[in-house]
Structures are given as C-alpha cells and as structure tokens.
Image (cartoon, rainbow, N blue to C red):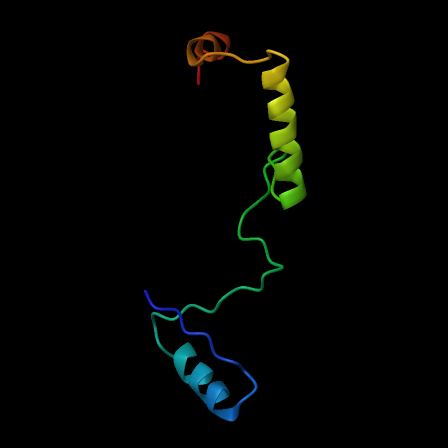
Length: 79
C-alpha cells in the first residue's frame, strides 16, 4: 500500500483528489477527531492515561499484588 500526502491548497491537488475519489479502491480518510472504535471503559487511551496505568502497575508489583497465569485462570475459569 502506498500513502500519498497532498497539500489541498493547490488547484492541481484539488483536481487530483476529485479524480482519486472516483476510483473504486480509494477510501477517504477520516478526521483525526473521529474515533473509529468505541471506547472500552477502563482501558487507557490517552498518553496520560497510559502513564498512570503503568505507574499503578509498577506500584502493584512493588506491593506484591501480582498473580501467576495459573492463579488468574483459577480466579477466572471461563476466560
């Protein structure tokens, strides 16, 4: 797959974009603001949320709140 980045300010770029939209294999990109997925509650998405999640995990490890895979399977047998 090849990605082509075009500045939309030039008339040539606008002509190319209009042409490309007519091709069956060209998909229009979404705005960065739009989410392509639903957020799952409790999962960290932003950089700040991920950093906080890692810090909580490190604190859990230091405090000894860790479980082996075998213990987790015993706690959640259907997973």
